[in-house]
Length: 249
Ligand SMILES: Nc1ncnc2c1ncn2[C@@H]1O[C@H](COP(=O)(O)OP(=O)(O)OP(=O)(O)O)[C@@H](O)[C@H]1O
Image: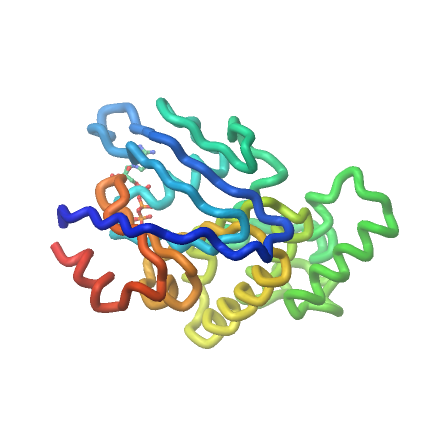
């Protein structure tokens, strides 16, 4: 696949509460070492509007995880700049939260303790209220005292979502968060995520292998190929066959 199709993407409507705009300018990251042979991403330039829901798709090795690691501040670009809400991303930051495939919950903490983890500096009563509200939003009211091993896979991902959103982040990064779940749970969680996103107004970058999931969730879809943007389109202006065609070798 060699064609690059960059379609103009209109700005998202003004119903924005917590989300921050994300900007990448000429971002390049290359892995070093014997095995890397120039692999990585870039140059990448992208603008994600505050409150936008962007899905990133692409074949294995196209750079999706590298891009998320850069956005999360785990990797630093060798050239170019990433900024969130006008501020340079220089490392992990409370305004950025990442939810991964296997919810990385602390096994020794309760559900409430896990969700409260990011709320250092928030007072006891307010903390309790915010944790309860976050758990209600992900349909886990009443599960406060359970430990992660007492939950199903879908419930653990719900806790991870609550923990990510309770800090009211500007940017929510999701790395194949539902791929380990069965189809029914996955569909239910995808719809819950959409509802949470609408309530929170957070900017979302969601990475998935599943093209139908990207079309269902995203307002906008960016397809990566060999670390570069091969397609950037509104979800309403593409289709499953077009996306599938893009990845045929
Ligand atoms: N730690 C690393 N050292 C060297 N090369 C790496 C490293 N991590 C990733 N790469 C290479 O960088 C490129 C992009 O990898 P990345 O993991 O970002 O792709 P991906 O789209 O997330 O793939 P997948 O869908 O399989 O997870 C690939 O060529 C990969 O082999």
